[in-house]
Length: 125
Image (cartoon, rainbow, N blue to C red; front, side, top):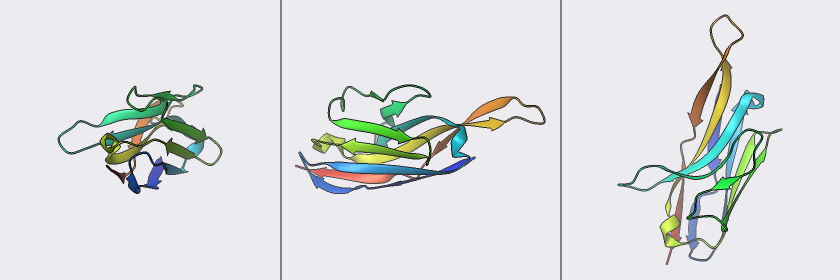
């Protein structure tokens, strides 16, 4: 079981930069995949970037080349560096993590997905 806390959101002008942080606590050694999502009113939550277990960062086409995601598996911290921000990047950004957990009395495992409460990023024109 893990808990996720995002921070770093705020107001920034178009073309500026912002870095979001997601700090995980609990059984961080059992976290497999991590990701950043964002959502605006009237739209579905969309994937921004993710790092699958043992993989490299992957990005949505809309942010590719501008955003950079990193992960520290030791302390459970995930960063999203956002550069050349655009007004359309305005959204609530959520941290997401998949955690491997025990099932019943056996040694089998299941994947449980956890979400942070989000941090607001506002990009002005």
